Every structure is written in C-alpha cells, then in structure tokens.
Image (cartoon, rainbow, N blue to C red):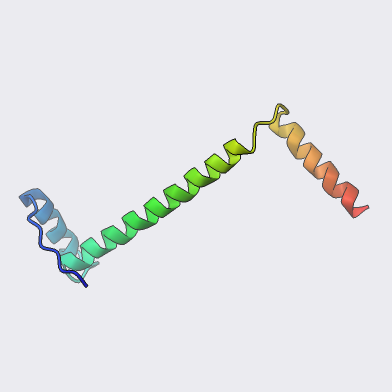
Amino acid sequence: MTELSKILPPDLESWIEARVAEGKFIDAGDYLRELVRRDRAVAEDTAWVRAMIEEGEASGYLDASPHDIVEEIIAERRARRG
C-alpha cells in the first residue's frame, strides 16, 4: 500500500479532526479512505448512467407519447398470454 503525505490548509485539517472526533472514523486516514471510496462509487455510478444515456440515444427516438408506448407494451403482453 502506498503512503501519501499531503499538507492541507488549516480549515480542512480542522474539518477532518472534527469528523474524527465525532467517533465515526478511527483517524484522518480512515476518513480520507472513506471519502475516496465514496468518490469512486459516485464516479462508477456516473459512468454507468452516461453509458445508459448513450445507449438510449443510439437506439433512436420514438414519436409516440409515453402513455401510448406503455399501452402498446401492455397490449403485447396480454396478447402473448393468450
């Protein structure tokens, strides 16, 4: 594991110390690791949403209203059930 050493402005250092003092984190490193995990999760979620949007846009657009599309899907499912 890599050890990082960074200098933070006093206001950020105070913020970290306050968060650790709340008892939710063991130390500053624990707090920073949690922030990195959350940031990574958000980045992965954002990438997935962007990929889904691109896939949707690539599939084309429909002229029908959302209501009509849902009604068509319902009718198709009913027809399959017989």
